[in-house]
Amino acid sequence: MSQLRTRTRAGLLASVMAAAAAVTMAGPASVASAAVPQQNVRFVAHLDITEGQRPENITLEPGGSAVVTFAYSRQIARIAQDGTVRILATLPAPPAGSVTPALSQPFLGGIVRAQDGTLYFLYATGSRDLTGVWSLRPGGTPHRVAALPAEGLPNGLALDQSGRRLYVADSVLGTVWRVPVTGGAPTRWSTAPELAAAGFLGANGIKVHEGSVWVSNLDKGTVLRIPVTRQGTAGTVRTRATGLINIDDFAFTGSGDTLLAAINADNEIALVEPSGRHTTVLTGADGIENPTSLAVRGTTAYIASGAYFTNNDPNLLAVRTAAHR
Image (cartoon, rainbow, N blue to C red; front, side, top):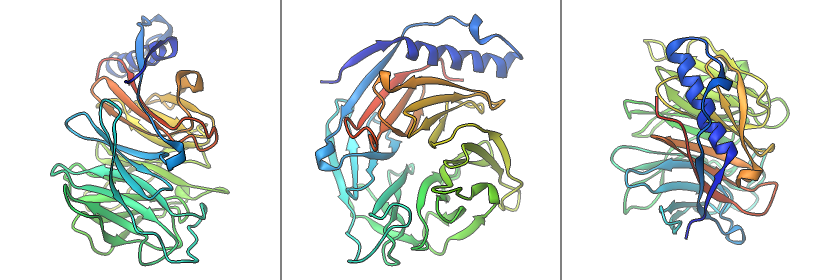
């Protein structure tokens, strides 16, 4: 059975989000003036660390389930609302001697779901025969639809609103790739210097939002906005937030530019306003353990924790938020 916890920080999350929405819609306002309702932080699932169930990325299904990638066990899994975990696929092991850039071991990264139920996800192995974009149709078996450079680390994945193109954030090569969902050769869509690593990993999380591609940079602690031009090319990069060192994935809270960011190594969730100002709204005291990714549906944010550094309780949380804007 899922455990239910009510916490002050979750109330703060709802409060700050409501205030941010008010600023967006009605001009400057005081965050402190917003009411602080009690909200719920609920454990959807406690995962099995001994089985390598460390969730790296998450996508939501219409029925309420979440599908996650288990980073180092090479598995795709569905987590039902009651916490039941079902393994949907296990990716093939790389050839002997393969070394995944930056991480050494095989790595399953971003995952998205198309309207027809097809799952697209990223696999990095350091080998040319496996690294790239993979897909899994309902009831089918996984197969690679697009190869990506073995010397890179495809990490974040986004699907555009038309459902025709995928965008891939490569953390080692500092590149955003664009790939047709039908597969084929990838396009090196952006190699802007803002995407580059500064010691470990650069471009990480990625989302398509309001006609732009948004990317987080883990090493530089930034959130970037790259407009998609009328020709489909990458426009000028704009830095929308700074000071978010160790940012992993992120998710928008509604139709505006307010977002929630997973600060992995620091064990925090930050709420980032359109101005770039950010506030810590959840910490380890709320149950998160090295959060890796987020997904928002309506008034609920789902947070996946990989427990990469705590090595304790990888889990999936559901957090009530403010009214959807």
